[in-house]
Length: 118
Image (cartoon, rainbow, N blue to C red):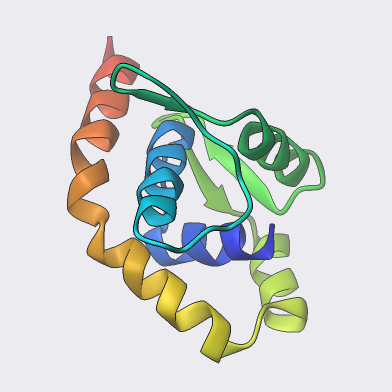
């Protein structure tokens, strides 16, 4: 779950749908964070990832930006990563891959924002 926090921190804000697709694409590229995914058509889902996100929201390390329906770190989440975050040599390659896949999730993020505006 710590790696999820590092990825959310890197993106600033990301939708749950975008994060799910991102981790799925990362797994396809060989970086497996331990989540099982189900793909039906173009829709990707993961019950385990959803549960971890709910847990991180519950303990206050993540929050949902109500205006955009996107996940972001809370101040407690930032502090948690400073104290208990993963070593930089573990985080950097994963975060670099996540950033390189940003173009894959940009349409998903735009869709989430458009749906929110309705």
